[in-house]
Length: 154
Picture 1 (cartoon, rainbow, N blue to C red):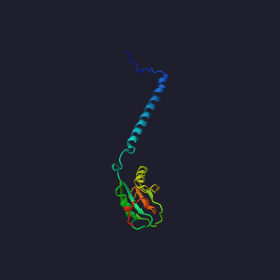
Picture 2: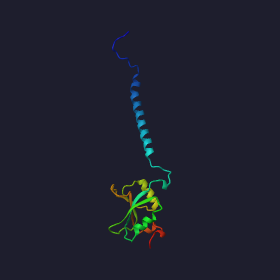
Picture 3: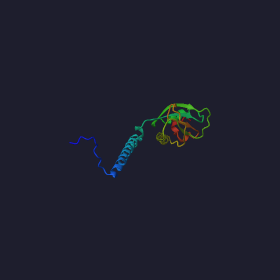
């Protein structure tokens, strides 16, 4: 019986001693990449849903050209769409010739949905985390392109 305090010898060849940590690091890296890839896939926006199955988009409708009741008429024209009008307002100076969407808190995916529902293609961003809605639509003098004749007070 050998009672010496010698540790057992490591009989791995020198090449295996070098490759083992490298392979371990590669496997760990692949596991991390796979984990985050699958997690991001699960967080990605859901596609294949109908518009009425998605949450409504919150907007503020602003009269940008000074025509009487224009913001209310525009909001009324949106009532059958998946859009929630949270308030109506007026610009201080009615100078808008073209209708525009302003991103306040929303994201690009919701912007694309809003553009599709309204037909408005012009947009800009003015982020404000305290704004009451995700988007603002400033209605310009070209409003007739976006409001059907039956939805307007003439």
